[in-house]
Length: 69
Image (cartoon, rainbow, N blue to C red):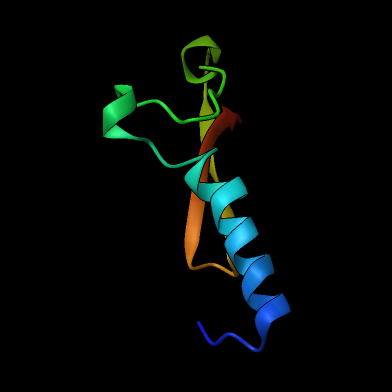
């Protein structure tokens, strides 16, 4: 990733921390949970499902979520 200036770097870091590190990335020290707890919706879905991918940081990371088909 090429950083184009201080403002761009701050926006990238904010997106990484808020959208990926605290909300999507599982932490071993938290028993596989995230610092911002997410609802456990996977167990509630009945029937066919599909996996959707949400790009973070322009596709450098992705957040995956299972939803009803």
